[in-house]
Image (tube, rainbow, N blue to C red; front, side, top):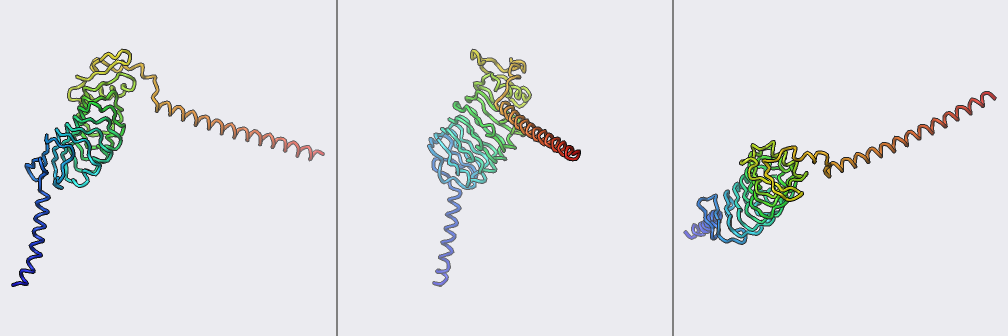
Length: 293
Protein backbone atom coordinates (compact mmCIF):
# COMPACT_ATOMS: atom_id res chain seq x y z
CA UNK A 1 0.00 0.00 0.00
CA UNK A 2 2.79 2.41 0.91
CA UNK A 3 4.59 1.57 -2.32
CA UNK A 4 1.50 2.54 -4.31
CA UNK A 5 1.32 5.85 -2.49
CA UNK A 6 4.99 6.56 -3.22
CA UNK A 7 4.37 5.67 -6.86
CA UNK A 8 1.32 7.95 -7.15
CA UNK A 9 2.98 11.02 -5.62
CA UNK A 10 5.29 11.75 -8.60
CA UNK A 11 2.39 11.15 -11.00
CA UNK A 12 0.15 13.58 -9.12
CA UNK A 13 2.94 16.15 -9.07
CA UNK A 14 3.37 15.79 -12.83
CA UNK A 15 -0.35 16.17 -13.42
CA UNK A 16 -0.53 19.27 -11.25
CA UNK A 17 2.39 20.81 -13.16
CA UNK A 18 0.67 20.13 -16.49
CA UNK A 19 -2.55 21.66 -15.20
CA UNK A 20 -0.63 24.72 -14.03
CA UNK A 21 0.96 25.13 -17.45
CA UNK A 22 -2.39 24.83 -19.18
CA UNK A 23 -4.04 27.31 -16.87
CA UNK A 24 -1.09 29.70 -17.29
CA UNK A 25 -1.26 29.40 -21.08
CA UNK A 26 -4.96 30.33 -21.04
CA UNK A 27 -4.67 33.04 -18.38
CA UNK A 28 -5.79 36.57 -19.15
CA UNK A 29 -3.49 39.54 -18.45
CA UNK A 30 -4.58 41.80 -15.59
CA UNK A 31 -7.01 44.60 -16.55
CA UNK A 32 -7.76 42.86 -19.87
CA UNK A 33 -10.67 40.83 -21.16
CA UNK A 34 -10.42 37.48 -22.91
CA UNK A 35 -13.79 36.66 -24.51
CA UNK A 36 -12.29 33.49 -25.98
CA UNK A 37 -9.07 31.50 -25.82
CA UNK A 38 -7.51 33.33 -28.77
CA UNK A 39 -8.50 36.96 -28.06
CA UNK A 40 -6.97 39.42 -25.59
CA UNK A 41 -8.74 42.78 -25.31
CA UNK A 42 -6.85 45.48 -23.36
CA UNK A 43 -8.58 48.45 -24.99
CA UNK A 44 -8.64 51.70 -23.00
CA UNK A 45 -6.95 50.40 -19.86
CA UNK A 46 -4.42 53.22 -19.49
CA UNK A 47 -1.49 50.89 -20.17
CA UNK A 48 1.96 52.51 -20.38
CA UNK A 49 3.63 49.33 -21.62
CA UNK A 50 2.68 46.07 -23.23
CA UNK A 51 0.86 43.71 -20.87
CA UNK A 52 2.57 40.68 -19.42
CA UNK A 53 1.31 37.08 -19.39
CA UNK A 54 -0.22 37.25 -22.86
CA UNK A 55 -1.21 33.69 -23.91
CA UNK A 56 1.19 32.29 -26.46
CA UNK A 57 -1.65 31.12 -28.71
CA UNK A 58 -3.27 34.58 -28.95
CA UNK A 59 -4.62 35.43 -32.40
CA UNK A 60 -6.35 38.78 -31.81
CA UNK A 61 -4.57 41.32 -29.61
CA UNK A 62 -6.43 44.60 -29.00
CA UNK A 63 -4.29 47.33 -27.39
CA UNK A 64 -5.91 50.53 -28.70
CA UNK A 65 -6.58 53.69 -26.66
CA UNK A 66 -3.67 53.32 -24.27
CA UNK A 67 -0.34 55.13 -23.66
CA UNK A 68 2.09 52.50 -24.95
CA UNK A 69 5.25 54.34 -26.19
CA UNK A 70 7.21 51.53 -27.83
CA UNK A 71 7.25 47.89 -28.93
CA UNK A 72 10.21 45.65 -28.06
CA UNK A 73 11.90 44.35 -31.20
CA UNK A 74 11.39 40.74 -30.06
CA UNK A 75 7.79 41.18 -28.94
CA UNK A 76 6.16 39.10 -31.67
CA UNK A 77 8.71 36.29 -31.70
CA UNK A 78 6.67 34.12 -29.34
CA UNK A 79 3.26 34.90 -30.85
CA UNK A 80 3.47 32.98 -34.11
CA UNK A 81 -0.35 32.59 -34.33
CA UNK A 82 -1.09 36.32 -34.12
CA UNK A 83 -3.17 37.50 -37.09
CA UNK A 84 -4.80 40.71 -35.76
CA UNK A 85 -2.92 43.47 -33.89
CA UNK A 86 -4.59 46.76 -32.96
CA UNK A 87 -2.25 49.45 -31.53
CA UNK A 88 -4.37 52.42 -32.58
CA UNK A 89 -4.34 55.60 -30.50
CA UNK A 90 -1.22 55.01 -28.40
CA UNK A 91 2.03 56.97 -28.00
CA UNK A 92 4.24 55.09 -30.44
CA UNK A 93 6.87 57.35 -31.98
CA UNK A 94 8.87 54.69 -33.81
CA UNK A 95 8.70 51.03 -34.82
CA UNK A 96 12.09 49.37 -35.04
CA UNK A 97 12.83 47.73 -38.41
CA UNK A 98 12.19 43.99 -38.26
CA UNK A 99 9.86 44.19 -35.24
CA UNK A 100 6.81 43.19 -37.26
CA UNK A 101 8.53 40.84 -39.69
CA UNK A 102 8.75 38.04 -37.12
CA UNK A 103 4.98 37.47 -37.21
CA UNK A 104 4.53 35.63 -40.49
CA UNK A 105 0.74 35.19 -40.05
CA UNK A 106 -0.15 38.80 -39.26
CA UNK A 107 -3.04 39.87 -41.51
CA UNK A 108 -4.31 43.10 -39.90
CA UNK A 109 -2.18 45.83 -38.31
CA UNK A 110 -3.42 49.19 -37.02
CA UNK A 111 -0.79 51.79 -36.06
CA UNK A 112 -3.06 54.76 -36.68
CA UNK A 113 -3.41 57.76 -34.36
CA UNK A 114 0.07 57.49 -32.87
CA UNK A 115 3.14 59.75 -32.92
CA UNK A 116 5.10 58.03 -35.67
CA UNK A 117 7.52 60.35 -37.49
CA UNK A 118 8.80 58.05 -40.27
CA UNK A 119 8.45 54.58 -41.75
CA UNK A 120 12.06 53.46 -42.27
CA UNK A 121 13.35 50.78 -44.59
CA UNK A 122 12.69 47.21 -43.43
CA UNK A 123 9.89 48.06 -41.00
CA UNK A 124 7.56 45.44 -42.50
CA UNK A 125 10.20 43.16 -43.97
CA UNK A 126 8.87 39.68 -44.84
CA UNK A 127 5.33 40.40 -43.56
CA UNK A 128 3.98 38.65 -46.63
CA UNK A 129 0.62 37.74 -45.05
CA UNK A 130 -0.31 41.33 -44.18
CA UNK A 131 -3.52 42.35 -45.99
CA UNK A 132 -4.59 45.57 -44.25
CA UNK A 133 -2.22 48.22 -42.85
CA UNK A 134 -3.46 51.38 -41.11
CA UNK A 135 -0.97 54.23 -40.67
CA UNK A 136 -3.33 57.18 -40.81
CA UNK A 137 -3.76 60.06 -38.34
CA UNK A 138 -0.10 60.23 -37.34
CA UNK A 139 0.32 64.04 -37.30
CA UNK A 140 4.15 63.89 -37.31
CA UNK A 141 4.59 61.22 -39.99
CA UNK A 142 6.46 63.10 -42.71
CA UNK A 143 8.73 60.47 -44.31
CA UNK A 144 8.20 57.04 -45.84
CA UNK A 145 11.27 55.19 -47.11
CA UNK A 146 11.19 54.10 -50.77
CA UNK A 147 11.35 50.43 -49.73
CA UNK A 148 9.40 50.71 -46.48
CA UNK A 149 6.71 48.34 -47.79
CA UNK A 150 9.03 46.02 -49.69
CA UNK A 151 7.89 42.41 -49.31
CA UNK A 152 4.20 43.19 -48.62
CA UNK A 153 3.09 41.17 -51.62
CA UNK A 154 -0.38 40.42 -50.16
CA UNK A 155 -1.23 43.94 -48.96
CA UNK A 156 -4.61 45.06 -50.31
CA UNK A 157 -5.48 48.09 -48.17
CA UNK A 158 -3.07 50.85 -47.15
CA UNK A 159 -4.11 53.90 -45.14
CA UNK A 160 -1.81 56.94 -45.01
CA UNK A 161 -4.45 59.65 -44.63
CA UNK A 162 -4.16 62.76 -42.43
CA UNK A 163 -0.42 62.55 -41.83
CA UNK A 164 2.33 65.14 -42.49
CA UNK A 165 3.41 63.85 -45.90
CA UNK A 166 4.38 66.55 -48.40
CA UNK A 167 5.59 63.99 -50.94
CA UNK A 168 5.77 60.25 -51.54
CA UNK A 169 8.09 58.23 -53.76
CA UNK A 170 6.08 56.31 -56.35
CA UNK A 171 8.36 53.31 -55.72
CA UNK A 172 6.59 52.92 -52.38
CA UNK A 173 3.36 52.08 -54.19
CA UNK A 174 4.89 50.22 -57.13
CA UNK A 175 6.10 47.49 -54.76
CA UNK A 176 2.53 46.55 -53.77
CA UNK A 177 1.19 44.26 -56.52
CA UNK A 178 -1.99 43.33 -54.61
CA UNK A 179 -2.98 46.87 -53.60
CA UNK A 180 -6.72 47.51 -54.01
CA UNK A 181 -7.44 50.49 -51.75
CA UNK A 182 -5.26 53.47 -50.84
CA UNK A 183 -6.06 56.48 -48.66
CA UNK A 184 -3.86 59.59 -48.96
CA UNK A 185 -6.27 62.45 -48.28
CA UNK A 186 -5.57 65.07 -45.64
CA UNK A 187 -1.80 65.33 -46.21
CA UNK A 188 -0.01 68.66 -46.89
CA UNK A 189 1.11 67.72 -50.41
CA UNK A 190 3.33 70.19 -52.29
CA UNK A 191 2.74 70.61 -56.04
CA UNK A 192 6.38 70.51 -57.12
CA UNK A 193 8.21 68.37 -59.66
CA UNK A 194 8.81 65.66 -57.05
CA UNK A 195 5.04 65.34 -56.70
CA UNK A 196 4.50 65.08 -60.47
CA UNK A 197 5.17 61.32 -60.66
CA UNK A 198 2.87 60.62 -57.73
CA UNK A 199 0.14 62.71 -59.35
CA UNK A 200 0.41 60.72 -62.59
CA UNK A 201 0.23 57.47 -60.60
CA UNK A 202 -2.89 58.71 -58.82
CA UNK A 203 -4.50 59.67 -62.12
CA UNK A 204 -3.86 56.19 -63.52
CA UNK A 205 -5.02 54.43 -60.33
CA UNK A 206 -8.04 56.45 -59.27
CA UNK A 207 -10.00 53.21 -58.97
CA UNK A 208 -7.83 52.36 -55.96
CA UNK A 209 -8.79 55.57 -54.15
CA UNK A 210 -12.05 55.07 -52.19
CA UNK A 211 -13.07 58.73 -52.69
CA UNK A 212 -11.09 59.37 -55.87
CA UNK A 213 -9.16 62.64 -55.78
CA UNK A 214 -11.80 64.32 -53.62
CA UNK A 215 -10.38 65.69 -50.38
CA UNK A 216 -6.83 65.74 -51.74
CA UNK A 217 -5.12 69.10 -52.15
CA UNK A 218 -1.59 70.34 -52.73
CA UNK A 219 0.01 73.72 -52.13
CA UNK A 220 1.69 75.70 -54.90
CA UNK A 221 5.43 76.26 -54.28
CA UNK A 222 5.17 79.95 -55.24
CA UNK A 223 2.46 81.30 -52.95
CA UNK A 224 1.39 78.25 -50.91
CA UNK A 225 -2.15 78.41 -52.28
CA UNK A 226 -4.11 75.16 -51.85
CA UNK A 227 -5.32 73.57 -55.07
CA UNK A 228 -7.61 70.50 -55.27
CA UNK A 229 -5.96 67.67 -57.20
CA UNK A 230 -9.19 67.22 -59.13
CA UNK A 231 -8.48 70.58 -60.80
CA UNK A 232 -5.02 69.57 -62.00
CA UNK A 233 -3.97 67.59 -65.05
CA UNK A 234 -0.79 66.20 -66.57
CA UNK A 235 -0.23 69.56 -68.29
CA UNK A 236 -0.07 71.23 -64.87
CA UNK A 237 3.38 69.69 -64.47
CA UNK A 238 4.62 70.20 -68.04
CA UNK A 239 7.48 72.41 -66.80
CA UNK A 240 8.86 69.40 -64.94
CA UNK A 241 9.36 67.33 -68.07
CA UNK A 242 12.73 68.88 -68.85
CA UNK A 243 13.97 68.79 -65.26
CA UNK A 244 16.36 66.02 -64.37
CA UNK A 245 16.21 64.21 -61.06
CA UNK A 246 19.23 63.36 -58.91
CA UNK A 247 19.23 59.88 -60.43
CA UNK A 248 19.21 61.36 -63.91
CA UNK A 249 22.16 63.58 -63.05
CA UNK A 250 24.09 60.60 -61.69
CA UNK A 251 23.39 58.66 -64.87
CA UNK A 252 24.59 61.58 -67.00
CA UNK A 253 27.75 61.99 -64.92
CA UNK A 254 28.50 58.27 -64.99
CA UNK A 255 27.89 58.13 -68.73
CA UNK A 256 30.18 61.11 -69.25
CA UNK A 257 32.94 59.46 -67.23
CA UNK A 258 32.58 56.23 -69.21
CA UNK A 259 32.69 58.12 -72.52
CA UNK A 260 35.76 60.04 -71.37
CA UNK A 261 37.58 56.88 -70.29
CA UNK A 262 36.67 55.18 -73.58
CA UNK A 263 37.91 58.20 -75.56
CA UNK A 264 41.20 58.26 -73.67
CA UNK A 265 41.73 54.54 -74.22
CA UNK A 266 40.87 54.88 -77.92
CA UNK A 267 43.29 57.80 -78.31
CA UNK A 268 46.02 55.87 -76.55
CA UNK A 269 45.44 52.82 -78.77
CA UNK A 270 45.42 54.99 -81.91
CA UNK A 271 48.61 56.76 -80.85
CA UNK A 272 50.32 53.43 -80.22
CA UNK A 273 49.14 52.16 -83.61
CA UNK A 274 50.43 55.25 -85.43
CA UNK A 275 53.73 55.10 -83.58
CA UNK A 276 54.22 51.42 -84.42
CA UNK A 277 53.27 52.06 -88.05
CA UNK A 278 55.77 54.91 -88.33
CA UNK A 279 58.52 52.76 -86.88
CA UNK A 280 57.63 49.93 -89.26
CA UNK A 281 57.83 52.34 -92.24
CA UNK A 282 61.18 53.62 -91.05
CA UNK A 283 62.46 50.08 -90.53
CA UNK A 284 61.25 49.03 -93.99
CA UNK A 285 63.03 52.00 -95.66
CA UNK A 286 66.29 51.29 -93.86
CA UNK A 287 66.17 47.64 -95.01
CA UNK A 288 65.59 48.77 -98.64
CA UNK A 289 68.60 51.11 -98.53
CA UNK A 290 70.81 48.31 -97.22
CA UNK A 291 69.73 46.01 -100.04
CA UNK A 292 70.48 48.63 -102.75
CA UNK A 293 73.95 49.24 -101.35
